[in-house]
Length: 446
Image 1 (cartoon, rainbow, N blue to C red):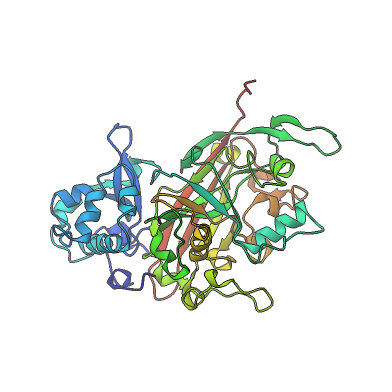
Image 2 (image 1 turned 180 degrees about the vertical axis):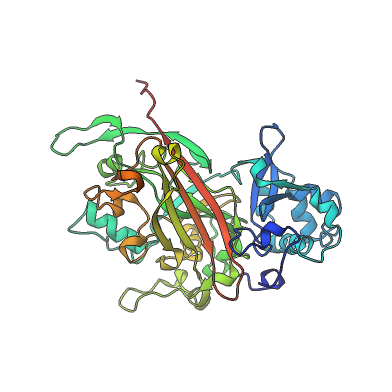
């Protein structure tokens, strides 16, 4: 596990002044990665690091010789060279020593007192002037179900007599999703069609989903993989995690309720998934580690999912928010409305447990694979991470500004997810935002 080092010092300040604001997502203690290019140019995508309201072109800075720590043959140099690629997979494959070495080199180049700031300044691009691709080529996507509060809430709606299935407290439940429909923040997607069994009818019909929902999640990007047939031990698992992003796994709840038994979600979730362009390294999140606690009355994890280190600091206190921006709000230039707020510290399973369980059967993970945490609902009603929960399955509409209300999402609605870590004695670390917008359904073919 990454421990605290000089890059986490809360007293550090950057010569990029926008990074020093108290509410900045991207101070010098963060340095998240993304794939970017100047908007509208057709330039090749390459890897950048966020600092304040700017993006540093890492490969360009390295080629100019302004990353003093990235000496030839060093881990930092190897990592910086990989940032000339259009996605993070090459960097992800290099492993923790390379990631940490590059992070240190970037930190020393971007903090107050750095040498050659004029040269590196010319390699900065305003975030307002860039566009993003997916941060990695995602080979496989697995979505977990790590919030027991969400699992219980949804279970009560779908299976009121048996809300939490008996395997939940033993197994980190997950399903394999679809990579082709994962999009970066700004994604616009058409309302999906699907089979729906309307209440009171005896046969399903194909129609646009009327119960479209968001899911407030984190995404976990795998760095180094494992060979087929070799499992990853829980205390080694975080060494295989490159970083964390925001993730919205949109859901068609009416399609889901008809199809989910016996094999779980399928068309109800594979039409769109939106992630943030920014990947925050696990090392940057080190100040926000916290204890992972399993309630005394619950079954304790099987040995492959348990360790003293995971219990001591395997959880992370990452604050999560979901906001809605309707077409009426945009037309009237009104502020978006907060729907829910929670924290990943409430999760029933940790990142390390997700990786250890995913590979216990010998499944081989690869650089750029994406794991979703599942909807992150907390223990109180205002901490739920979906409209399904907020509206009690559509029975209780929620009031929005300007007289609007919602049970589920309407065409033109945008959902914006945000996340950050903050506490006294540590620098604020933000994950940026993941924005997605629902467009009207397309004409169905066939």
